[in-house]
Length: 251
Image 1 (cartoon, one colour):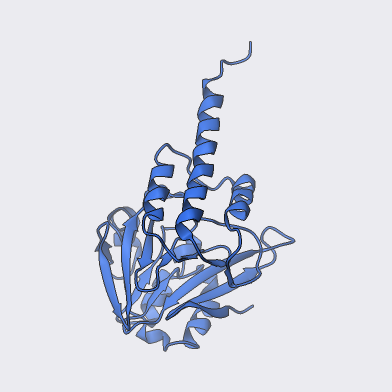
Image 2 (cartoon, rainbow, N blue to C red; image 1 turned 30 degrees about the vertical axis):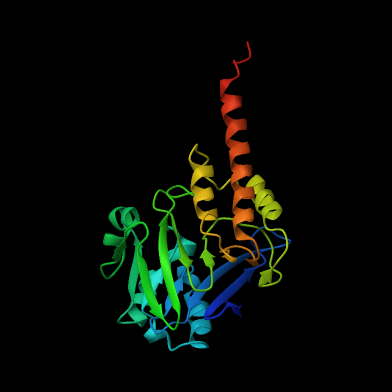
């Protein structure tokens, strides 16, 4: 098994591992994104047991020991399972994450102290790449959840948002909302709560030109419209759940 490498925006590379045994017959992708600035950043370390595959993919783009930043959406095995393996390989690397994630997990679990990112904090990576951290608690799950917006290319590194099944193309201009709705129907992985729509619409306000999905193809096009449509679906689900709870119990 190896990772496919595709440049989805200038200086941003998608390192994708397709695992056929998860959700067969279509399988499931695990995507990791390398931003190749003067201070390279890896968004998603990957599973600990997948570390050799991701490391070898990174090595085709940069010397792994030059990695400077490690970031991810939230504390979960496929997002940061290999965090400490990367810290061991790259002596100058530092985990960067939001205040909640650092407080509840990373201050203890990371082998070196993380950089705490406040909502809106920026990291200049050089070579025209700069990321802004946006807090998105519980979106789509995880109290510590957050995303990164690369402002030069308009690429939103959106973690588990728009999760879908299958492999396929690295970059699409087609529908990503329908497949995401289908995956939610199957996995029920999101933490439904009243603030979901507002938080996702806040991301739509960033007007991204690309959406870098952790599970599925990267999307190029009107990212704001896709985010608003996803927010609509979550709000529909929440309304249906509330309505169900409000019904009197059968006697």
